[in-house]
Length: 408
Image: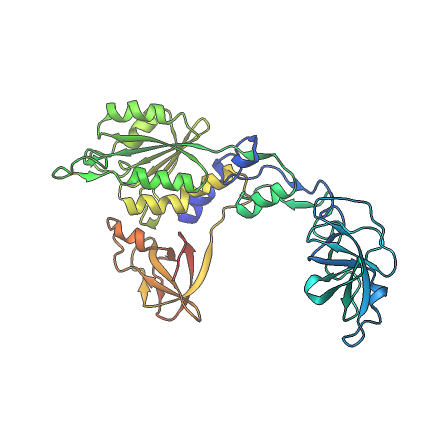
């Protein structure tokens, strides 16, 4: 039996980074970048108005005051997206819109709400009531991005912010890591599929659906192989096909009972053992092996154990395949609402509910910690990792491994 920390390290060192592919921008969302993204030009590419208003020469407003406003003649209008040729001469101004270019001779923009417009004959003027600072309300060329600057490093997830930036830079195609194809197989004579009538002594196959969702959430492409019966023929036929994918995940049949046949069949199919059994609760019987480039995970049959084992171990393989620099976990801190202790012989993954409060996060241990209590997963938003023999007291500040979003 190995430690959780060692298991994670072994998985990380065993998994290989996936190849690169180029996809259309619209297909890149949710993928992991395989290239550094550089600015192809200065941005903004020209000096532009940051507000609707009037472009002017700052020196024309030096004497402006509320009692003695300066009059400037409106000599033209520039719309965003147009580039009519203008030169701004002394005593004049140009009507500009947010984003419109600013012509030569301009060094500030006064906001439209800060001036008064008047007509004198056929000419229009603005009244400026205070001196305007140089550069006021101007977005200068290159102030956001400089040509050649690395804006997003490879290894970043293309989320909405990155997606927006890629479009901002004019990218129509993006290089990303390929997505791992993942086979998912549940084992057990007691399992039946959702949608069928629940027979006596049977349970619905929850693991395949939970793992399917976790694979999707972590950027993989899941392939559901359904249920294999607890006999070597059924397992061999199904596992042989499932081992053709980047990752094969099997839930159930990895303990040491009479009908726990998965590891025996995997070995007959040429899978090399890397480790079996981890000193963690829940999740002790986790198996990890490899055949060629296929990573093989045997997870416990209890849905809670399978769910948490994916988060703590299988997820590591995804991160390495996507080219992350190291395994990444998200933690927050909070205050325990009650005492917790681990009197067992393994590290405990204690399910908790994280409740944001005015002063701090409140960490509430879930009252049902048995591996068979799947209802706990719906309420659980985080884990507190409690070492063997460790005792944590109410009010103590603890580190929480975040599993899901949490709300008030």
